[in-house]
Length: 158
Image (tube, rainbow, N blue to C red; front, side, top):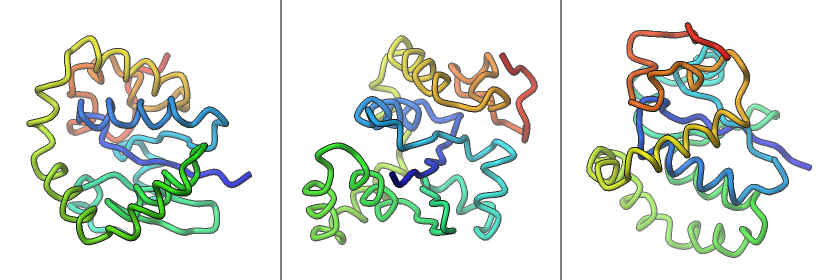
């Protein structure tokens, strides 16, 4: 069974909410969430410029494959139950998918404001359930979007 590491911005409420939806779809546990700001996230994304790391989400595979933004979405969806057809559609519509992803990523605070604080807390809890104990997602500030600011390791692991 192929597994992948999904790298996300721990300080982005919309990102956490979207990742929690993906993790709920991933009933087989093939995806492992890692905050971009975590030490492991920095290692996995070392070949990217620091600005590119937080510009989108990423997916890393054990063979060294690393994909960002829309191409990462295509590969993640393909790993999910029933995801092959939607992934093929995303690939077929790549120019549209790319532009749509870029638009949302550049303005992610806008959809983030539409997501309730309770939904963001539930998303944070869902991600915590699948994260390493030293992840920044365990920092109490993660639910407020302030966990990774200036930090590279989790000061509050639980």
